[in-house]
Length: 464
Image (cartoon, rainbow, N blue to C red):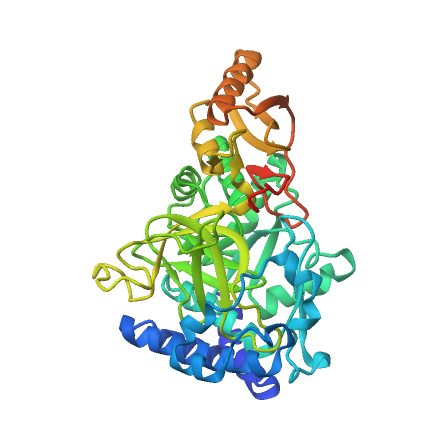
Protein backbone atom coordinates (compact mmCIF):
# COMPACT_ATOMS: atom_id res chain seq x y z
CA UNK A 1 0.00 0.00 0.00
CA UNK A 2 1.19 3.52 -0.83
CA UNK A 3 1.40 5.42 2.47
CA UNK A 4 3.29 8.36 0.94
CA UNK A 5 0.40 9.56 -1.24
CA UNK A 6 -1.96 10.35 1.70
CA UNK A 7 1.04 11.82 3.57
CA UNK A 8 1.70 14.26 0.70
CA UNK A 9 -1.89 15.17 0.00
CA UNK A 10 -3.13 15.22 3.60
CA UNK A 11 -0.11 16.64 5.44
CA UNK A 12 2.69 17.98 3.20
CA UNK A 13 0.52 20.21 1.00
CA UNK A 14 -1.56 21.64 3.89
CA UNK A 15 1.66 22.37 5.83
CA UNK A 16 3.17 24.13 2.80
CA UNK A 17 0.04 26.24 2.56
CA UNK A 18 0.30 27.24 6.22
CA UNK A 19 4.05 27.75 6.33
CA UNK A 20 4.84 29.16 2.89
CA UNK A 21 1.50 30.39 1.62
CA UNK A 22 1.58 27.72 -1.12
CA UNK A 23 -1.60 28.00 -3.24
CA UNK A 24 -1.11 25.28 -5.86
CA UNK A 25 -4.25 23.45 -4.75
CA UNK A 26 -6.28 26.67 -4.94
CA UNK A 27 -4.99 27.47 -8.43
CA UNK A 28 -5.68 23.86 -9.45
CA UNK A 29 -9.26 24.18 -8.20
CA UNK A 30 -9.57 27.43 -10.17
CA UNK A 31 -8.38 25.72 -13.37
CA UNK A 32 -10.79 22.84 -12.85
CA UNK A 33 -13.56 25.44 -12.72
CA UNK A 34 -12.46 27.52 -15.70
CA UNK A 35 -11.98 24.45 -17.91
CA UNK A 36 -15.79 24.21 -17.87
CA UNK A 37 -16.24 27.80 -19.05
CA UNK A 38 -17.71 28.55 -22.44
CA UNK A 39 -15.34 29.92 -25.05
CA UNK A 40 -16.65 33.46 -24.54
CA UNK A 41 -16.07 33.17 -20.79
CA UNK A 42 -12.52 31.93 -21.38
CA UNK A 43 -11.78 34.81 -23.73
CA UNK A 44 -13.11 37.30 -21.18
CA UNK A 45 -10.91 35.74 -18.48
CA UNK A 46 -7.88 36.00 -20.74
CA UNK A 47 -8.81 39.57 -21.70
CA UNK A 48 -8.97 40.64 -18.05
CA UNK A 49 -5.60 39.06 -17.20
CA UNK A 50 -3.93 40.50 -20.30
CA UNK A 51 -5.30 43.98 -19.54
CA UNK A 52 -3.83 43.86 -16.05
CA UNK A 53 -0.47 42.58 -17.32
CA UNK A 54 -0.14 45.18 -20.08
CA UNK A 55 -1.05 48.08 -17.78
CA UNK A 56 1.61 46.87 -15.34
CA UNK A 57 4.21 46.44 -18.09
CA UNK A 58 3.58 49.92 -19.47
CA UNK A 59 4.08 51.48 -16.06
CA UNK A 60 6.78 49.34 -14.45
CA UNK A 61 8.88 47.46 -17.04
CA UNK A 62 11.61 49.53 -18.77
CA UNK A 63 11.67 47.32 -21.90
CA UNK A 64 8.03 48.18 -22.62
CA UNK A 65 8.21 51.90 -22.14
CA UNK A 66 7.70 54.00 -25.27
CA UNK A 67 6.00 51.26 -27.28
CA UNK A 68 2.63 52.97 -27.45
CA UNK A 69 1.08 50.85 -24.72
CA UNK A 70 -1.22 53.65 -23.61
CA UNK A 71 -3.84 52.95 -20.98
CA UNK A 72 -6.79 53.87 -23.20
CA UNK A 73 -5.72 51.42 -25.93
CA UNK A 74 -5.07 48.62 -23.46
CA UNK A 75 -8.44 48.95 -21.76
CA UNK A 76 -10.28 49.30 -25.07
CA UNK A 77 -8.73 46.17 -26.65
CA UNK A 78 -5.80 44.47 -24.88
CA UNK A 79 -5.36 41.94 -27.71
CA UNK A 80 -4.92 44.73 -30.26
CA UNK A 81 -2.62 46.57 -27.86
CA UNK A 82 -0.49 43.44 -27.54
CA UNK A 83 0.09 43.52 -31.30
CA UNK A 84 1.88 46.87 -30.84
CA UNK A 85 4.63 44.99 -28.98
CA UNK A 86 7.51 43.70 -31.15
CA UNK A 87 8.22 39.97 -31.25
CA UNK A 88 10.78 38.98 -28.59
CA UNK A 89 13.39 36.34 -29.43
CA UNK A 90 15.49 34.49 -26.87
CA UNK A 91 18.61 36.17 -28.20
CA UNK A 92 17.07 39.64 -27.79
CA UNK A 93 15.88 38.83 -24.30
CA UNK A 94 19.31 37.53 -23.25
CA UNK A 95 21.04 40.69 -24.45
CA UNK A 96 18.94 42.99 -22.25
CA UNK A 97 17.26 40.74 -19.69
CA UNK A 98 17.53 43.31 -16.88
CA UNK A 99 15.31 45.71 -18.85
CA UNK A 100 12.45 43.23 -18.48
CA UNK A 101 12.54 43.14 -14.68
CA UNK A 102 9.65 45.02 -13.12
CA UNK A 103 10.53 48.06 -11.03
CA UNK A 104 8.21 46.64 -8.35
CA UNK A 105 10.08 43.31 -8.14
CA UNK A 106 12.29 42.49 -5.16
CA UNK A 107 15.07 40.54 -6.90
CA UNK A 108 16.27 39.02 -3.64
CA UNK A 109 12.95 37.21 -3.27
CA UNK A 110 12.70 35.97 -6.85
CA UNK A 111 13.32 32.44 -8.13
CA UNK A 112 16.13 32.13 -10.67
CA UNK A 113 15.56 29.58 -13.42
CA UNK A 114 16.89 28.79 -16.86
CA UNK A 115 15.70 26.98 -19.93
CA UNK A 116 17.16 23.61 -20.84
CA UNK A 117 19.39 25.14 -23.49
CA UNK A 118 18.72 22.43 -26.08
CA UNK A 119 19.23 24.97 -28.87
CA UNK A 120 22.37 26.58 -27.47
CA UNK A 121 22.96 28.90 -24.55
CA UNK A 122 20.31 28.49 -21.80
CA UNK A 123 18.08 31.49 -21.13
CA UNK A 124 18.30 32.70 -17.53
CA UNK A 125 15.20 34.39 -16.15
CA UNK A 126 13.31 35.25 -12.94
CA UNK A 127 9.96 34.09 -11.63
CA UNK A 128 8.08 34.45 -8.38
CA UNK A 129 6.16 31.87 -6.35
CA UNK A 130 2.88 33.02 -7.89
CA UNK A 131 4.13 32.15 -11.39
CA UNK A 132 5.67 28.80 -10.43
CA UNK A 133 2.53 27.70 -8.62
CA UNK A 134 0.39 28.47 -11.66
CA UNK A 135 2.75 26.35 -13.76
CA UNK A 136 2.41 23.46 -11.31
CA UNK A 137 -1.37 23.82 -11.11
CA UNK A 138 -1.57 23.58 -14.91
CA UNK A 139 0.42 20.33 -14.86
CA UNK A 140 -1.80 18.80 -12.18
CA UNK A 141 -4.93 19.93 -14.02
CA UNK A 142 -3.76 18.03 -17.10
CA UNK A 143 -2.80 14.95 -15.10
CA UNK A 144 -6.13 15.04 -13.25
CA UNK A 145 -7.86 14.26 -16.55
CA UNK A 146 -6.22 10.83 -16.25
CA UNK A 147 -7.02 10.24 -12.57
CA UNK A 148 -3.57 11.34 -11.39
CA UNK A 149 -3.25 13.62 -8.34
CA UNK A 150 -0.33 15.54 -6.73
CA UNK A 151 0.48 12.60 -4.47
CA UNK A 152 0.30 9.91 -7.14
CA UNK A 153 3.39 7.70 -7.22
CA UNK A 154 5.55 7.94 -10.36
CA UNK A 155 8.78 6.76 -11.93
CA UNK A 156 10.66 9.33 -13.99
CA UNK A 157 12.93 8.38 -16.88
CA UNK A 158 14.86 11.59 -16.65
CA UNK A 159 18.33 13.02 -16.43
CA UNK A 160 18.66 16.75 -15.89
CA UNK A 161 22.28 17.44 -14.89
CA UNK A 162 21.24 20.43 -12.79
CA UNK A 163 18.84 18.42 -10.68
CA UNK A 164 21.04 15.33 -10.50
CA UNK A 165 24.35 17.00 -9.59
CA UNK A 166 26.51 14.59 -7.57
CA UNK A 167 26.75 16.72 -4.44
CA UNK A 168 22.96 17.00 -4.27
CA UNK A 169 22.01 13.50 -5.45
CA UNK A 170 21.16 11.89 -2.09
CA UNK A 171 19.18 14.89 -0.84
CA UNK A 172 17.40 15.08 -4.18
CA UNK A 173 16.43 11.40 -4.07
CA UNK A 174 15.02 11.65 -0.55
CA UNK A 175 13.06 14.80 -1.33
CA UNK A 176 11.71 13.19 -4.48
CA UNK A 177 10.68 9.99 -2.74
CA UNK A 178 9.09 11.38 0.43
CA UNK A 179 7.82 14.79 -0.70
CA UNK A 180 6.95 14.06 -4.34
CA UNK A 181 6.42 10.28 -4.27
CA UNK A 182 8.68 9.53 -7.21
CA UNK A 183 11.96 7.87 -8.08
CA UNK A 184 14.18 8.34 -11.14
CA UNK A 185 15.74 5.97 -13.64
CA UNK A 186 18.50 7.91 -15.36
CA UNK A 187 17.79 8.62 -19.03
CA UNK A 188 21.56 9.02 -19.47
CA UNK A 189 22.33 5.44 -18.48
CA UNK A 190 19.67 3.19 -20.02
CA UNK A 191 21.81 0.07 -20.20
CA UNK A 192 20.20 -2.99 -21.86
CA UNK A 193 22.27 -5.14 -19.50
CA UNK A 194 20.38 -3.68 -16.55
CA UNK A 195 16.91 -3.91 -18.13
CA UNK A 196 15.61 -6.58 -15.76
CA UNK A 197 16.82 -4.46 -12.83
CA UNK A 198 14.86 -1.45 -14.14
CA UNK A 199 11.72 -3.54 -14.62
CA UNK A 200 12.06 -5.04 -11.15
CA UNK A 201 12.46 -1.55 -9.66
CA UNK A 202 9.26 -0.32 -11.32
CA UNK A 203 7.32 -3.45 -10.36
CA UNK A 204 8.45 -3.13 -6.75
CA UNK A 205 7.78 0.61 -6.51
CA UNK A 206 4.34 0.24 -8.16
CA UNK A 207 3.86 3.74 -9.64
CA UNK A 208 0.57 5.04 -11.00
CA UNK A 209 2.35 6.52 -14.02
CA UNK A 210 5.70 6.90 -15.80
CA UNK A 211 7.01 10.34 -16.80
CA UNK A 212 9.95 11.29 -19.00
CA UNK A 213 11.56 12.31 -22.26
CA UNK A 214 9.80 10.89 -25.33
CA UNK A 215 12.98 9.32 -26.73
CA UNK A 216 14.06 7.87 -23.38
CA UNK A 217 10.68 6.23 -22.74
CA UNK A 218 10.62 5.00 -26.35
CA UNK A 219 14.10 3.48 -26.01
CA UNK A 220 13.06 1.83 -22.75
CA UNK A 221 9.95 0.39 -24.42
CA UNK A 222 12.02 -0.85 -27.35
CA UNK A 223 14.37 -2.70 -24.99
CA UNK A 224 11.46 -4.23 -23.09
CA UNK A 225 9.76 -5.44 -26.25
CA UNK A 226 12.97 -6.90 -27.65
CA UNK A 227 13.49 -8.80 -24.39
CA UNK A 228 9.87 -9.89 -24.19
CA UNK A 229 9.37 -8.14 -20.84
CA UNK A 230 6.21 -6.55 -19.43
CA UNK A 231 5.39 -4.80 -16.16
CA UNK A 232 3.40 -6.73 -13.56
CA UNK A 233 1.19 -3.72 -12.75
CA UNK A 234 -1.37 -1.52 -14.52
CA UNK A 235 -0.36 2.08 -15.18
CA UNK A 236 -2.81 4.94 -15.56
CA UNK A 237 -0.59 6.57 -18.17
CA UNK A 238 2.87 7.15 -19.54
CA UNK A 239 3.52 10.90 -19.77
CA UNK A 240 5.81 12.08 -22.57
CA UNK A 241 7.36 15.52 -22.21
CA UNK A 242 10.17 17.83 -23.38
CA UNK A 243 10.43 16.39 -26.90
CA UNK A 244 8.21 15.79 -29.92
CA UNK A 245 6.29 12.55 -29.50
CA UNK A 246 6.02 10.81 -32.86
CA UNK A 247 3.16 8.48 -33.75
CA UNK A 248 5.38 5.41 -34.09
CA UNK A 249 6.83 6.11 -30.64
CA UNK A 250 3.39 6.46 -29.08
CA UNK A 251 2.19 3.22 -30.68
CA UNK A 252 5.11 1.20 -29.33
CA UNK A 253 4.94 2.76 -25.86
CA UNK A 254 1.21 2.05 -25.57
CA UNK A 255 1.72 -1.51 -26.80
CA UNK A 256 4.48 -2.28 -24.30
CA UNK A 257 2.96 -0.57 -21.24
CA UNK A 258 -0.72 -1.32 -22.06
CA UNK A 259 -1.89 2.19 -21.16
CA UNK A 260 -2.32 5.60 -22.82
CA UNK A 261 0.82 7.55 -23.71
CA UNK A 262 -0.10 11.19 -23.21
CA UNK A 263 1.58 14.37 -24.36
CA UNK A 264 2.59 17.17 -22.00
CA UNK A 265 3.70 20.38 -23.70
CA UNK A 266 5.51 23.11 -21.83
CA UNK A 267 8.75 25.01 -21.40
CA UNK A 268 10.72 26.14 -18.39
CA UNK A 269 10.41 29.72 -19.55
CA UNK A 270 6.68 29.53 -20.29
CA UNK A 271 5.14 26.87 -18.07
CA UNK A 272 2.69 24.13 -19.04
CA UNK A 273 1.09 25.32 -22.27
CA UNK A 274 -0.92 22.25 -23.20
CA UNK A 275 -1.97 18.80 -22.03
CA UNK A 276 -3.47 15.83 -23.81
CA UNK A 277 -6.94 14.96 -22.55
CA UNK A 278 -8.86 11.66 -22.81
CA UNK A 279 -10.30 12.88 -26.13
CA UNK A 280 -6.63 12.51 -27.28
CA UNK A 281 -6.42 16.22 -28.10
CA UNK A 282 -3.83 18.63 -26.63
CA UNK A 283 -5.82 21.33 -24.83
CA UNK A 284 -4.03 24.66 -24.41
CA UNK A 285 -3.67 26.27 -20.98
CA UNK A 286 -5.68 29.25 -22.19
CA UNK A 287 -6.04 30.71 -18.70
CA UNK A 288 -2.27 31.11 -18.21
CA UNK A 289 -0.99 32.33 -21.56
CA UNK A 290 -1.82 34.04 -24.83
CA UNK A 291 -0.47 31.74 -27.55
CA UNK A 292 0.06 33.04 -31.08
CA UNK A 293 1.19 30.86 -34.01
CA UNK A 294 3.30 32.83 -36.49
CA UNK A 295 4.75 32.17 -39.92
CA UNK A 296 8.48 31.37 -39.44
CA UNK A 297 9.49 33.80 -42.21
CA UNK A 298 7.03 36.71 -42.02
CA UNK A 299 6.20 36.42 -38.30
CA UNK A 300 2.55 37.08 -39.15
CA UNK A 301 -0.30 34.85 -37.87
CA UNK A 302 -0.79 31.59 -39.75
CA UNK A 303 -4.22 30.30 -40.74
CA UNK A 304 -5.90 27.61 -38.66
CA UNK A 305 -4.56 24.21 -39.65
CA UNK A 306 -1.14 25.62 -40.64
CA UNK A 307 2.04 25.09 -38.64
CA UNK A 308 3.51 28.18 -37.00
CA UNK A 309 6.07 29.36 -34.47
CA UNK A 310 4.73 29.43 -30.92
CA UNK A 311 4.76 32.96 -29.55
CA UNK A 312 3.80 33.18 -25.86
CA UNK A 313 2.69 35.92 -23.51
CA UNK A 314 2.78 34.50 -19.97
CA UNK A 315 -0.15 36.05 -18.14
CA UNK A 316 1.17 35.26 -14.65
CA UNK A 317 4.79 36.40 -14.65
CA UNK A 318 4.69 40.11 -13.79
CA UNK A 319 8.18 40.22 -12.21
CA UNK A 320 10.03 39.69 -15.50
CA UNK A 321 7.34 39.64 -18.18
CA UNK A 322 8.15 38.54 -21.71
CA UNK A 323 5.45 39.66 -24.12
CA UNK A 324 5.17 37.86 -27.48
CA UNK A 325 8.13 35.64 -26.67
CA UNK A 326 9.28 33.15 -29.33
CA UNK A 327 9.87 29.76 -27.73
CA UNK A 328 11.39 28.18 -30.82
CA UNK A 329 8.71 25.47 -31.10
CA UNK A 330 6.23 24.87 -33.90
CA UNK A 331 2.59 23.87 -33.55
CA UNK A 332 -0.76 23.87 -35.37
CA UNK A 333 -4.16 24.97 -34.09
CA UNK A 334 -7.06 22.60 -34.62
CA UNK A 335 -9.36 24.60 -36.99
CA UNK A 336 -12.47 23.50 -35.05
CA UNK A 337 -11.12 24.64 -31.71
CA UNK A 338 -8.72 27.54 -32.22
CA UNK A 339 -9.20 30.74 -30.17
CA UNK A 340 -10.80 32.38 -33.23
CA UNK A 341 -13.21 29.53 -34.02
CA UNK A 342 -16.87 30.27 -33.31
CA UNK A 343 -18.01 26.66 -33.67
CA UNK A 344 -15.93 24.35 -31.46
CA UNK A 345 -16.27 20.60 -31.88
CA UNK A 346 -18.70 19.41 -29.20
CA UNK A 347 -16.89 16.07 -28.94
CA UNK A 348 -13.95 17.74 -27.16
CA UNK A 349 -13.40 17.38 -23.43
CA UNK A 350 -13.77 21.13 -22.82
CA UNK A 351 -13.81 24.52 -24.58
CA UNK A 352 -10.06 25.07 -24.19
CA UNK A 353 -8.45 25.63 -27.61
CA UNK A 354 -6.82 22.52 -29.08
CA UNK A 355 -3.34 22.21 -30.55
CA UNK A 356 -3.83 19.82 -33.45
CA UNK A 357 -0.15 18.94 -33.46
CA UNK A 358 3.19 19.81 -31.92
CA UNK A 359 5.59 20.08 -34.82
CA UNK A 360 9.07 20.20 -33.27
CA UNK A 361 11.66 22.93 -33.00
CA UNK A 362 12.16 26.01 -35.15
CA UNK A 363 15.72 24.95 -35.99
CA UNK A 364 14.38 21.51 -36.95
CA UNK A 365 13.18 23.25 -40.11
CA UNK A 366 15.74 22.25 -42.72
CA UNK A 367 16.37 24.45 -45.76
CA UNK A 368 16.99 23.28 -49.33
CA UNK A 369 19.53 25.14 -51.45
CA UNK A 370 16.76 27.15 -53.13
CA UNK A 371 15.34 28.25 -49.76
CA UNK A 372 12.47 25.75 -49.58
CA UNK A 373 11.62 24.82 -45.99
CA UNK A 374 11.47 21.11 -45.15
CA UNK A 375 10.11 20.15 -41.74
CA UNK A 376 12.19 17.71 -39.70
CA UNK A 377 9.13 15.47 -39.32
CA UNK A 378 9.43 14.62 -43.01
CA UNK A 379 12.88 13.20 -42.34
CA UNK A 380 11.44 11.05 -39.56
CA UNK A 381 8.73 9.74 -41.89
CA UNK A 382 11.28 9.09 -44.64
CA UNK A 383 13.53 7.13 -42.32
CA UNK A 384 10.76 4.76 -41.31
CA UNK A 385 10.95 3.06 -44.73
CA UNK A 386 14.36 1.70 -43.69
CA UNK A 387 13.85 -1.07 -41.09
CA UNK A 388 17.62 -1.46 -40.65
CA UNK A 389 17.95 2.11 -39.29
CA UNK A 390 17.53 1.99 -35.52
CA UNK A 391 18.25 5.66 -34.84
CA UNK A 392 19.28 8.71 -36.84
CA UNK A 393 20.19 12.36 -36.56
CA UNK A 394 20.43 14.83 -39.43
CA UNK A 395 22.56 17.93 -38.86
CA UNK A 396 22.41 20.63 -41.53
CA UNK A 397 25.54 22.80 -41.50
CA UNK A 398 24.63 25.16 -44.37
CA UNK A 399 22.32 25.36 -47.36
CA UNK A 400 24.80 23.14 -49.21
CA UNK A 401 26.01 20.62 -46.63
CA UNK A 402 24.59 18.25 -44.02
CA UNK A 403 25.56 15.12 -42.10
CA UNK A 404 23.35 12.11 -41.42
CA UNK A 405 24.44 10.03 -38.43
CA UNK A 406 22.91 6.57 -38.41
CA UNK A 407 22.80 3.59 -36.06
CA UNK A 408 22.07 0.37 -37.97
CA UNK A 409 20.81 -2.96 -36.71
CA UNK A 410 23.61 -5.39 -35.98
CA UNK A 411 21.95 -7.89 -38.33
CA UNK A 412 21.82 -5.42 -41.24
CA UNK A 413 22.45 -7.48 -44.40
CA UNK A 414 24.00 -4.71 -46.49
CA UNK A 415 24.88 -1.57 -44.46
CA UNK A 416 26.51 0.28 -47.35
CA UNK A 417 23.52 -0.26 -49.61
CA UNK A 418 21.16 1.01 -46.90
CA UNK A 419 23.30 4.12 -46.31
CA UNK A 420 23.57 4.86 -50.05
CA UNK A 421 19.81 4.55 -50.58
CA UNK A 422 19.11 6.69 -47.50
CA UNK A 423 21.56 9.33 -48.72
CA UNK A 424 19.86 9.45 -52.11
CA UNK A 425 16.44 9.90 -50.48
CA UNK A 426 17.72 12.68 -48.21
CA UNK A 427 19.30 14.54 -51.11
CA UNK A 428 16.03 14.22 -53.05
CA UNK A 429 14.13 15.61 -50.07
CA UNK A 430 16.60 18.52 -49.76
CA UNK A 431 17.66 19.41 -53.33
CA UNK A 432 21.09 21.01 -53.54
CA UNK A 433 22.20 19.80 -50.12
CA UNK A 434 25.10 17.32 -50.13
CA UNK A 435 24.95 14.70 -47.36
CA UNK A 436 27.85 13.01 -45.61
CA UNK A 437 26.81 9.65 -44.17
CA UNK A 438 28.22 8.45 -40.84
CA UNK A 439 27.48 5.03 -39.34
CA UNK A 440 27.89 5.44 -35.57
CA UNK A 441 27.51 3.27 -32.47
CA UNK A 442 25.79 5.86 -30.28
CA UNK A 443 23.84 9.12 -30.52
CA UNK A 444 23.91 11.13 -27.32
CA UNK A 445 21.25 13.60 -26.13
CA UNK A 446 22.03 17.29 -25.73
CA UNK A 447 23.22 18.72 -22.42
CA UNK A 448 19.58 19.28 -21.46
CA UNK A 449 18.90 15.56 -21.76
CA UNK A 450 16.73 15.96 -24.87
CA UNK A 451 17.35 14.08 -28.10
CA UNK A 452 16.81 15.82 -31.42
CA UNK A 453 16.35 14.07 -34.76
CA UNK A 454 17.07 17.09 -36.95
CA UNK A 455 19.24 20.10 -36.18
CA UNK A 456 19.98 23.17 -38.29
CA UNK A 457 23.19 24.81 -37.12
CA UNK A 458 22.86 28.09 -39.00
CA UNK A 459 20.40 30.98 -39.00
CA UNK A 460 19.15 31.64 -42.49
CA UNK A 461 19.13 35.09 -44.07
CA UNK A 462 15.33 35.02 -43.74
CA UNK A 463 15.76 34.90 -39.98
CA UNK A 464 14.59 31.34 -39.57
